[in-house]
Length: 280
Length: 262
Image 1: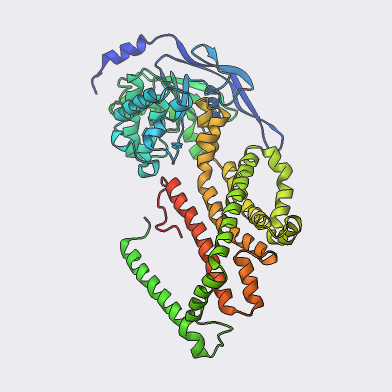
Image 2: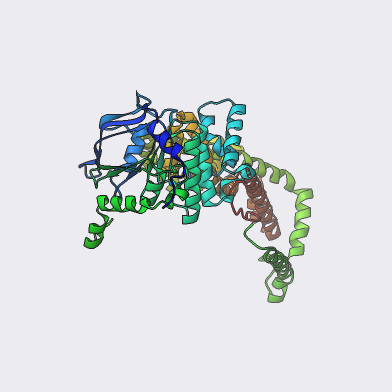
């Protein structure tokens, strides 16, 4: 059995501020489909993230995870309920929240440095400050040598790191991450997961991570929330009491990781669906 | 760089050989096949006619007139096409309302408007420029419109999440994203502009290469027609090359730019 390598980490979690960074209160989202039928994507979801917490959201495809992310970033307004960031109701895009998707969404006509500066540029940060911020981020993500490259010259993993730098450049308090690493290969993913985890810990960011990867959920977060099939509801919550949240690769080695993954598999009902062939 | 240096070297040699063979066939082929020179004049006759036209018919003056009309028609036509493309692309309602008329105008053969414009504006340069504007307008409009409509909505959302204004979304996302299709439209437009101008000149007036074309035909001067066609090709080629050079400068960030752009 591995020794608990960093008791300090556990203390940190225990003493984590009770300030709620991100909160969903009774959020319901309905869409009208093309046939004019009303469709409930998300039903009565309430959840909250304390300062510095990293929470993963898992669930079957189409259960409304991405809808929740759009509501949190202010791109979509919920049919009922509301989202709050730092206690303020989200009524539109705001500077405290930044999101990152599976697609890197880099602009091909901008260099890497210019891509990282995109958000701060839009927000009107003075040129000198935006450049120094972007350069600091590039350096912490080992991308300094690529500052003047164009996106097509970079590998998928590096592009995703640039997207992370762009997300962090606006200095958000809350990061919404929608399957950020699902498009990169398994080895790159592990490296990126560790970089993200270290960055989140170092910058004391709060993050909501949407993922399909149960191992990613367990190794990267303080808590895992489980959503049901559509209409998406929160059906379960699992606290991950493991050390090394800043280092998913180290956490992987922990014996109880498998137990957590198994619990999540059971709660998602993955075994049953495999048996009935109904897995999406 | 898509082609390797070996392909480029071999391709260049082959290209030059092909050109020489073509010129030789033009010079001696008709004679060998017994084709009279009023059907296909040999290369040397066309060459002599070229210098005669420069001295006697003001070939360079007429070429200049045509080139000026092409440039004016191309610039105005692409400017209007791009503006309408962006406006329609950003307003689905306007696009829906105007699309049947745009389609109708697009189907109508633009060169058929040449006599009408000459009736309106007389034997001046303006009807020729107007035909060129009309013919350049649509490929540019259609390319820009579809480019604006197909911008990745996630990119727009990314900008919106950073609280971008409508103007910022246009200038930082939609406009740069539309540039590659815009240039594709400009390339087509640059060659079509020559067509529009020549048809206008053929229909009426006494300036421009189109006029020389009609004049040569009236004189049954086949070499003159050949020279004029060559000069028109040169004008169109320069216009096209200018667009390609600009495109290579503006779109330098794109991977795998074609080596020559042709």
